[in-house]
Length: 244
View 1: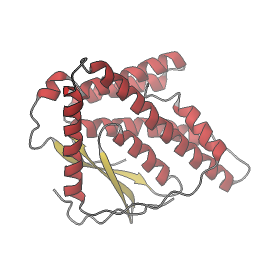
View 2: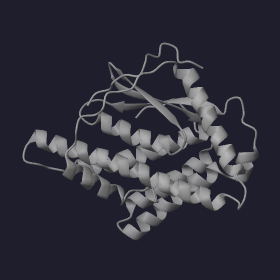
View 3: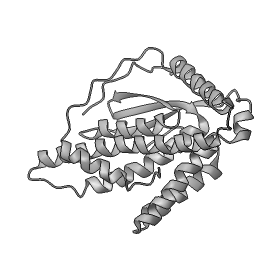
C-alpha cells in the first residue's frame, strides 16, 4: 500500500495501531474484542473531544490521501472495505484505474485520513490472511468464494464501525443540546465541499458482479471477530470503473 500523507497526530495513530496489533495477536476472542473496542472507541471519542469541537479549523485542516488498492479479482472488494472505513470517519473517496493498478483518492481532515489509513492496513491484512485459507473445488470457484468473503467482511466492518460511532456520539451529546451534532454536521459539509472542489466532476462506478452468498456470509461472520469493536488534482481524471 502506498500513500501520500504524513501523520498529523502520531500519538493518537500509534495508540490505535498498538491496540489493533494486540487484538490481532491474541488467540483469546474476548481479549481481541476488548482491544478492538478500545481502538474504535478511542477514535470516536477523539473526533468529538470538546476541545477539538471548539477549535477553529486551520487552513490546512483538510487534505487528500492516495492509497493504492492493487488490481485483479479482489480490487473491488478492497475498494469496498476502504470506502466503508472512510465513510465511518467522514472521509470521501473516489478511485481510478491506472496502468499500474487502481488508486483510491480520499478527502478529509488530516487526523481522520491517518486513522483510515491505519485501520485499512490492519483490516486488509487480517482479511487477506483468512482469504488465503479458503479452498474450493477449482481455482475459479476458490476465487469466487474468496471474493465473496471479502465483500461480506467489508460490509459488516462498515456496520460495526457505524454502530460504535453512533454509540459514542450519543453518549457525548448533552441532554437538550444539539451542539455536538451541529459541529459534526458542519465538519461533514466542509469535507463534502472540499472533495467536490478537489475532484471536479466524477461518474459512478459500475456495480460489482454478483458474489457467492455462502462466501459472503462467511465474510460477515469473520468481520464479527475483527479488530474494530463495535485544490483540484492536477491531471486527475473522472472516476474510473475499476476492475473486478
